[in-house]
Image 1 (cartoon, rainbow, N blue to C red):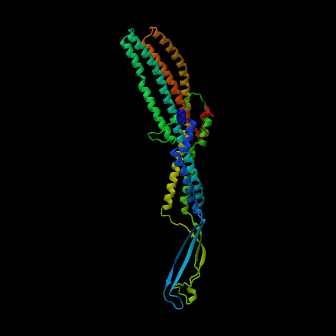
Image 2: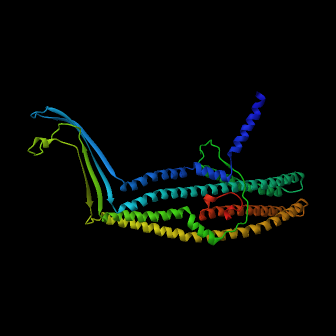
Length: 442
């Protein structure tokens, strides 16, 4: 059995490594299922169902039941000195007319809708945060790999200069220059490595993973690609105004403010309730002590039921109702102003993002042409340098130019992916998000 132990261990290690790999779709799915903020908003949605029942209770009947039991003592002709007794009584109050009932019923339904949109807002925010962290991790990992590959080339040049120096064909200054050039990339590589680790922590937190010191962090799969994308500003602006979760939430808050104002103003209107009082007493000889009746038979306590109606109307307001109305109206007006600001900012934000896409596309086209020129220039300079026709400074300048151009292409791809994420957030596309190429433009 021992010969199977090592292959099984290797297979287990491979499975654990593959389990830590994470695609963008899997990351977003884990955000939906495991993110703490999303789970909290989901719990608040369940709580809103109870709040709706509280708002609806104003239209439901109110029933109270109470009871008592004991003994009655004392001497009376023809009766036992100690008599047990018990009775149950209840009250029922059913509102027949109250101005706050329709608004309260609508307000209860709005409470659930508000909680649902708050869940959507939290979900969009966490999905967006996870997506940015995912792209940032890919960018810094690619940046680190680019720096390491470039440093490997420079290390080869440094070893070549070391051999030439030992052979006496170059001086010590040339070797020092090559060594310095190779070591220049170390701080950039370390910075990219630290930024990659920080992005992994953000991604793990967004996906609800364990952040213990010995916990395994996710490893994002894929790479950052550049794909020219076009958007219709007018169409997407209209769609964003209709489907963005934060705008829907703001509209619901305005509607709930109107209902709160109606509920507060209902105190100025009359109220009519149906009331029913009932009392049940088991068969007993219990008598009232001071009924005032001349006949002893009238002193017997008996069961009864008495329906009726109650009518109330506030004639003079002491400020409680008026103040509540003013407070509710001011909150509604504040929400209306915030809603207008949000709606007006949608077009400006999308226009800025469209200009950002155009600038990134123009920059990428320029860099594509520059990288070909930089690669050809480096090949020519390197050949001339090995033949002794070019200086170390020229070769170093060509290497630096190629590295800057390749990093520029990586920066353009990273900025475009971030801009796509911002566009999906600004247009409310996160519930339609897919990782396929061109999905954001559909």
